Image 1 (spheres, rainbow, N blue to C red):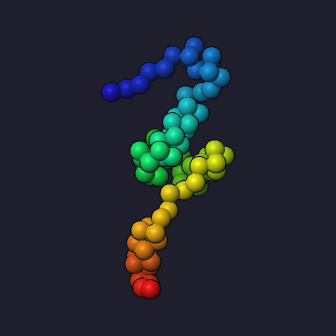
Image 2: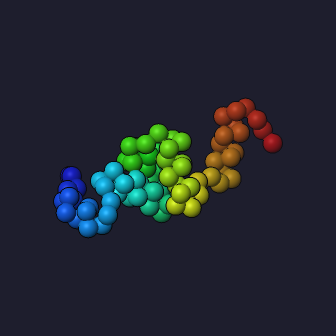
Length: 79
């Protein structure tokens, strides 16, 4: 399924298709509907560029205790 938005609508919204995709990806990430990887892929951005877009929108990276424990385990560090 494809989403088609007419240029006229984008123009009225004063945005581009690329900007709209980034906005949508950031929104879905913020609402925890997509992972970081999924959202950055939707936005068509690399990791750092997507994180910069999140920062512009004051959206924080989801990183909890479970993520920390998994990272520490992957590094071979135990507490």
